[in-house]
Image (tube, rainbow, N blue to C red; front, side, top):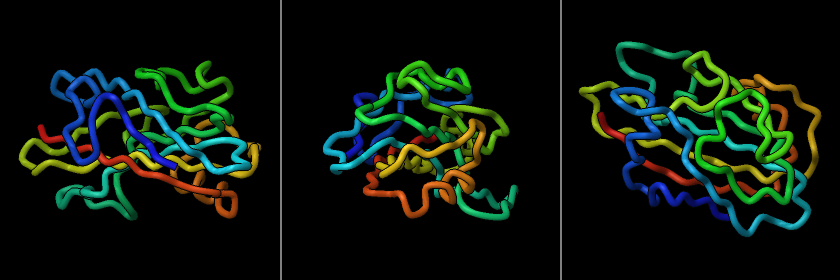
Length: 163
């Protein structure tokens, strides 16, 4: 399985319109996944920043979470640009959004500190073997706990952003 975006290539800059700050509109980028494994029932996606936490804002655990989206039914093969505006999505039908580390539901674009070097933003798509009974608003940790034992395959796409 692979994940790509027409907005940016692997390890290349994410366009400013997808950023959270300084003129960015925090519009989620278009994503496309191909070659999912046989037996996939639905997909989940997490976007996070492994270059956080920041020294001046220590965090308890893990990278800064920018997006949690799940219950995307197979045969969904991607997400259109800007789908992250509502907790419950119409495209793909039935998809739900979780909480990001900005304290919001949906997509929160890149926003590294102004003096920081470029940060990496990792989009991880998970192909799941079941349609899980999940509610909207899950955190990354809650989603990962719920999909444990159901992951058939996963793929990553990494973009960068510097303010």
